[in-house]
Image 1 (cartoon, one colour):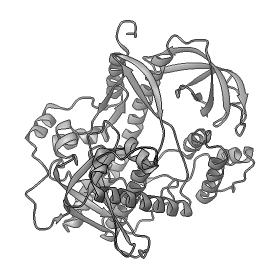
Image 2: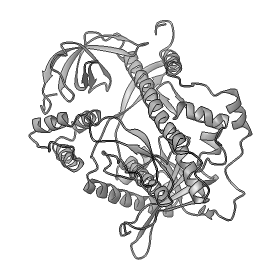
Image 3: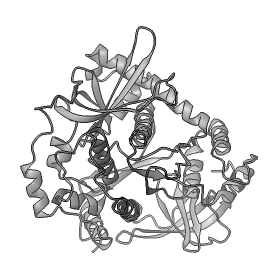
Length: 499
């Protein structure tokens, strides 16, 4: 099957489905899961007396332009005395996606929504994820609410987590809110019409920057990568657009990182297990040390997050344009994250990149199974019920989610490469500048600066290592296998300013 016989989008969808099946993932919902979703009812009223009623707060969602599976809302207030309060509301799926149900079985099989350029394969049917369990605008929904730590809170302060009924007052987008916060665009209509919402967002932005600064003081890494989105025209790949970060994306990231930390501490304080998100010390720290040295910087011989953070801050200040390339290099060298179950009294493994010891995934239950599972632990703790899982069950789930995350990432990576191969079809012989993103016995890979695609260096790869800048010539593409092959024509050591 080739793109001369079938449109590119249709071919990519076929590749995606086949790749999922080969890795034990389910591209389609079983009939019994569809039937369960059809019988589901709204997670809104009636409410019991244990729920807080927070519908009048000016909650809002901020997400991508096309997102409809809204997992979280945010709110912040500023008191007359200058004290701030920040809340995150997370969609409560506890009464809709039940353990041992067909919906739960499918969610467990894939463990996440799978994002490919031609199609998103949601973890839950859209009747739930984009409707009944989504925090959509104007809808009353039950949520798990997390109060973020304040600037003057004592470390011993008990985490504030509770269930409440909330209402989304405005569905906002990263692009519009980011431009407004940065002063490069007008307030979107929903903001322009609501002074309380504008104040909440300004306060959220201030709190988010404080949270980020505090993490950086502890050694959290300053990283910035390029997110790429495929644009289709009819059935063909038209462009691959690099999407820049902005203050709205930073705001949500900072709030979610803080909320995940609060949830982990809350479960620990109630003597419940935690499904932790862990990133251990870097697998290739010596290579990171070498890269810093080639920029004229010095890192200690043993992994140290604070020293690496300081190096990255200096590099960002000196070369803002090239910083995403360096960030990508460091991310590749840090190694993969994993899920690990911890129990009361266990020693805790932290998250090297975030410089935190207490961290879980909890803020996207419509999209990730670990978040759904964490929500079940939180609900049990709030209702003072026994832990719903044994230690062996929780360890097994952690290992399964880590394995399936690897499968999903391989599918998503294949589809990104297949999509890029569609874009580069017919351009054999052209030369491009790029950066080496992988170098091992399995092969050497390079990411082009423009267009932002990744391929394998098939010729003259000797001596290349992660972070090196190269000039490559396109040898050929194979869309179905996701292959883009290059020959290295010129090599610049890491740290070189030549592009």
